[in-house]
Length: 308
Image 1 (tube, rainbow, N blue to C red):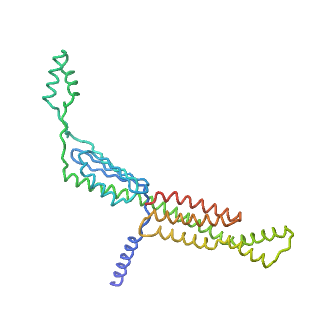
Image 2: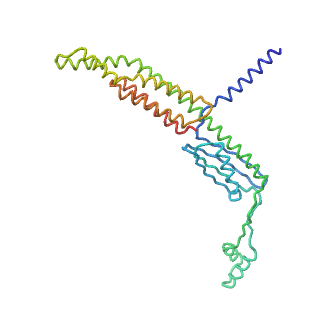
Image 3: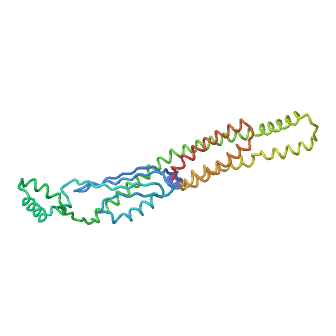
């Protein structure tokens, strides 16, 4: 019985460790929201995230909370890392709770002055008086620290909601990347298979061109020149490097950190090798395969713009 318990404990621990070390990529697109209901008001915290090269924070909050903006920015920067982030706090009064009061002495003076100018309905005079300057006093509210602690808790909830959304979007991106990288790898295998046929085709075209000149030539010298010419079109290094880049890209998708910038750099290297294969191929069927690889890579690059 103890052996079974030990085995189950080991399985749970190793499974949990595996889950903790494998982190999928995150998208920069996400949405998070949390609503705090207080006795006299409803506070809604909303977060929206889009892709951006760096962290671009746009914070909108009522003036009463403005002194807390710096701490909010630091919190969001530590949690969200990159992206164009729109953060908003909306406050909706749900009970009789107002910070604006009528300035009675001023309003009375306005009414008296209006009555001295023209006789009329006192109600109309009152309507006019409250529109004049200083007719209303706004009492500046102070932050209730207990209320702010509740807001911070809901800010954390909304942020985690956005992160979960980013992870969900990242899972879809990851599947797409695996599919497209695999497709490029499959096309590369076709290029590798086709390469001997391509080299032989280049050799035959050159020999045919020489034969059509109907000139005598040194066979040994021709072979030397042919080897030199064909070496210029050799794509062995490009094939190896492209294969390594594809493996490195997959390895970084499955790494512990979501790093869209690094994946972007790797995709650029992949593009260089594919372009070089295309320029060296000198063979229409292989160039068609190169176009297919370029098409898949461009789709990868477009999606990488949205990876955290």
